[in-house]
Length: 118
Image 1 (cartoon, rainbow, N blue to C red):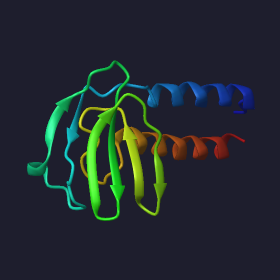
Image 2 (image 1 turned 30 degrees about the vertical axis):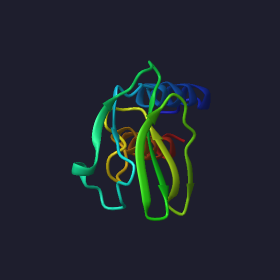
Image 3 (image 1 turned 180 degrees about the horizontal axis):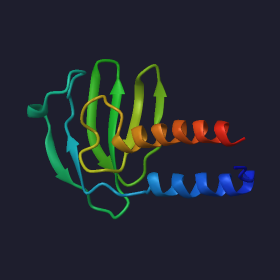
Image 4 (image 1 turned 90 degrees about the vertical axis):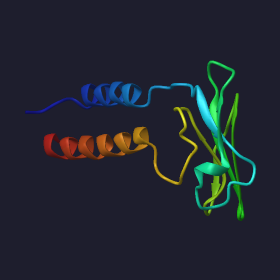
């Protein structure tokens, strides 16, 4: 069965929009000197104020801080930088978000299907 590239591309884009739906976080962890090992007792849960807010984690050497912001641009240099996410309490530990994991698995599956069909 042959599928046109434009049909396949359209399906991939539609799936990407569904998987990467943009949701604002309504609650985030907040702490000033959280340390590199996640200790929930050093953090508090705060409610965000805007409809499109981000949870943010900032890593500078051994200093880690967590909060929320109305706009955020991720920047990563060897594990140090600013990490932004938009699901509740997503700025906790150093683990990939479920959305990113689903996106990566979906991309791999689509690549396999594409290779099989073309």
